[in-house]
Length: 309
Image 1: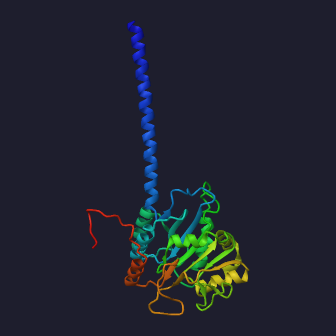
Image 2: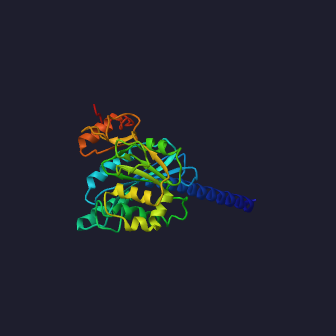
Image 3: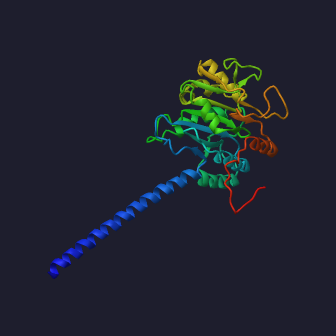
């Protein structure tokens, strides 16, 4: 009887060990999910957890903010502006900051810290410039930059937006505007000249224009963008579209995109609710007025740790 009891106790002990190990594995799995969620939050990316990035119907947009290496404070501010927008439209919107090769020793350290912390910077192989090919280099580089994401969906992004660093993009409005549009051969933005409503007349303003991924791939392989690079970057981009007869699905986002109303101009109007982007926010006062108008901080939760009144 003692031998039988010993075997029973040993069996119970083995079962207890198995249950305990299974519990530890489950706990580790849960923590890994939470840890990965934290990593995703730390990147400058707005996403909706209800629509995983690998679902084919999930709209994927890359907002690329062209800026300069030394604009550290501007990038940190824009990270707050984009990172505090809660996406409700069932899409993935990634924000990346884009500039050319670093030229100073302090940049190498400062930018490296940003990359380690936020992983939201693209450094192009070019000399910093405004109208001598930076935009061309950017679009031609994208297919190679994202070519290693073999496990991800194709295309990596349905749309790529080139935006200035003095433009406030309201991501939910952008997603709502893009969702019903064509996902191929699309050219979207604020039509230039400012008085025109014809998207085929000239080109889209550099404040923030959008193209579909197939156009990005065309730019990567075509000689037209490679040979014609000098001149105002938004006008040059429009030349590519016209000469190659690309961007046949054009969408004029005027007047949901516009310049800040002060000073008033033919390209501007007062702030209003039906807004995708506001351009020419050249100083902090204009940014604060714009964020206040759109009640950007409305989701701030009350806490005993602070009071803002």
